Image 1 (cartoon, rainbow, N blue to C red):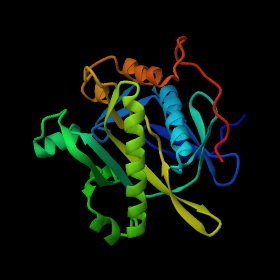
Image 2 (image 1 turned 90 degrees about the horizontal axis):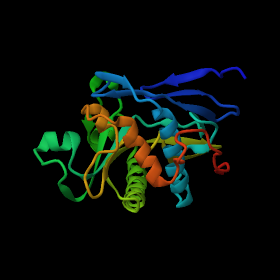
Image 3 (image 1 turned 45 degrees about the vertical axis):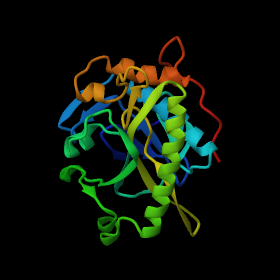
Image 4 (image 1 turned 135 degrees about the vertical axis):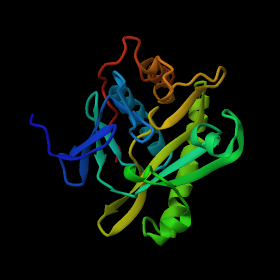
Length: 254
């Protein structure tokens, strides 16, 4: 079967045209980047694991009524998704101080925040994805006030659900990044969750030991990067004892 036309290539994924209008095929790469692509490398099997983890989490979120672009997994590295108009924002949720928050504000990493914080960043690699306010977002037309309200409401639901889900398997959801898009159906538009949810864009720590099981192992040269991703999948119950291999995906999400 011939490869379909490539639509877009990012740091961790490639998008191809889908088999039907309004769909895309999302391919997960093993490439890894950090610090706005200043550090580059490869994490063996990352694409396979992220495909499975994101499939599982997007499916669970759909079950509780969080709309997203995921339709079904196609194979080890590809999933079928709905084509959306990506809103040029990265929405970061912080539950525990880590990363740039600790650096910017001098808060010790690992400090539990009094409440979850939502931050917005403008998606632009050349500018280093700068932090922006709601005033910037509405002024430059990236999203309307209603769009922002919808994004925040969905983000809080995602955070509540994923925090509980991960805690149930002994993992603390420290912080994570979400992206959203506009899904057009006839003349109607709604905001839906897009991109992926995986150890690439979540900080996931062992709830007892604080051991990192995410891309920080790559960023900080901690070693055993593949093992960290595999442990997340194992705890979620989606990594068989035989190791990483292809498995039957769920039924199509309507």
